[in-house]
Image (tube, rainbow, N blue to C red; front, side, top):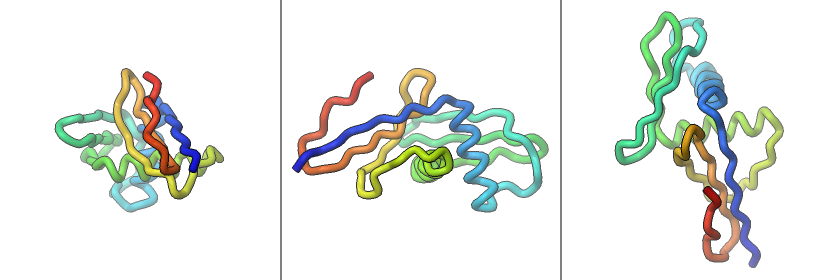
Length: 111
């Protein structure tokens, strides 16, 4: 069976937008405000902290970050294979959503 591997790179601004929308949708933010900064942490697993004006920062784990990026792809009409294995990692100044589907050996991902 053929396999497919894709990577989608997101800038910090795109990540901030995705987390802000995800947080507004999921009720993580208490009051209206504008996102001001996002911080990424790689201690063990990836996490992010979103700073929004007039309130305490909101922290996201890797699964929540992936969900926010998938929702952003959906809103921007970027097709994603439903059954693909999805993972995230940080590369240079980008957050990368990796997708792999099929049974073949995992291909080497480009840098």
